[in-house]
Image (cartoon, rainbow, N blue to C red):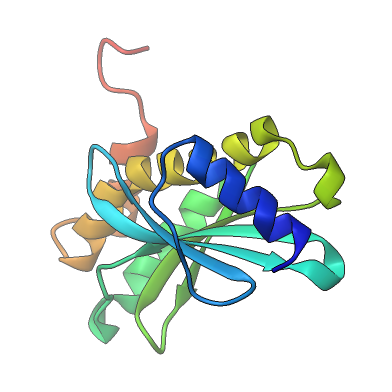
Length: 155
């Protein structure tokens, strides 16, 4: 196990996350937000000092919904300043990735916390829209408006 993964494990332990090593470079955990629960992966690429954190959305996208889901995720990504949604159309898997390239001795608890917390908060915010598009109860455009437009009285 490399020094970056050791730092990741220390972060998760100190913030009371339940983690399970999947390999020498990957930790698995889970998150429960206001809008759902999903698995997460912490991935370390030691040779390039990259730390990647993925939220894996468990809802599989049926092929018939691929176009609308892709459009929704494209629109969602447009306004994000940190992280991005990824969509594997063949597997129907949606995930959100945040990442940083940093030397292990420069990787602070605060940096780690910011990266991980931003990731799960974005997924929790967009999850209702994603689910609405998957079940075809809303178009991509309507779902993005629901998520990104302030409600009357919030402006």
